[in-house]
Image (cartoon, rainbow, N blue to C red):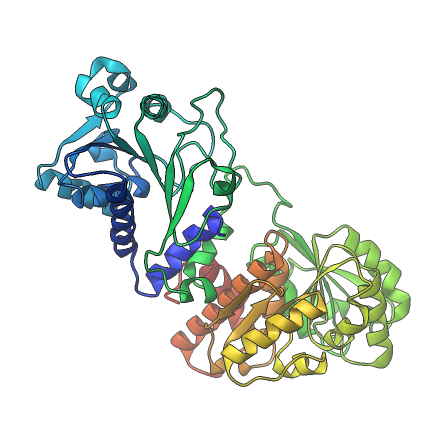
Length: 497
């Protein structure tokens, strides 16, 4: 099954792979036309009731393949307000073919003031519901509400109703109808949905056909620009809605935790705090006035710091542990103790990755681990040179481990044991030290608002896209800090990557 948001992302990823929405619409319309043909005979009376979006566009395509039926296409609204170019092109094609079309410009037309519009539905042997698609939620508005009542009355009188993708009024993800009364949603007999079944169709009292419209598997497997749609922000957002990331790092190294904190901020986190040994706290703070530091006594992380870290983590959205900590035995003991007692979401990077297998069975935390291939092996994970073999092996290991993995490489593999994604952005210039610390920060910011697999996938894509932008502009020899300014551009689609 696929949710409406994920379907929109897959559509956009398909376009980025060279399969444009216009081509998908042609396939969708053909699928609808086939379903209608199977349920009607030449000369039967058909009514298509279409909205102004791409759901209506699918039906406009279907109309071109149903000319041997007595067909009337009703557009709910004015043609000049059709919302997408491809839907408008297919509406225009119906005009050029001189098919019978009616613009329903007000609710009264469906209530009977336009005899042709009302009769087209009332007298139909089959009605196609193409008013609203999977991305529309909430109670039906006019004129769709009145159209729904008219369609349901036609159904009661014996007409067959075929819905495009999802019956109008039904939430594609939940199956709920937000409105009240018997006409809160179209009562479809058959649903032609596209690419994969939608969760909300499970409880719909209709037969459901899943039509293959030519979306390649790569559009779901490979992270692409469509995945960035998950990063949109509501207009009424408030400070704190997008996370306060705690970075536990530093001691032997100062730049790593500073890079991670800055990357988290550039990736949209509202705040970033670095808990680090007091010996390096001033240096970490010096990298940016936006970093908050919480000094810990001594010159490296120790078990005696764990209670303080747990208190700090409890007040933050996400913790990133590892950047610059080093692998001193007592530091790894502290990391092990912290992870065992932690709750919430923790991104584990660098040297503490090796203690994850020791604690994953007992921790209450949700762990997102970011190893490179060597670190994965040190965790007890698989070795595989081919990215396809590695994807399968990482998925199996993530399932056994009980954690989400973001395995860095020329092709990054992200898996939680069930869903697996692969990222292809990035370049050999990103072998520079510190790029993994940047990735950890991006991941920490994103997992504050996204599911772990989605956060890891988008973070890998953004980090690689930022690296590609740096190399395109300056060539190899990048510094990890060069990525920071490119992160917001990569996240919100302002680069060519």
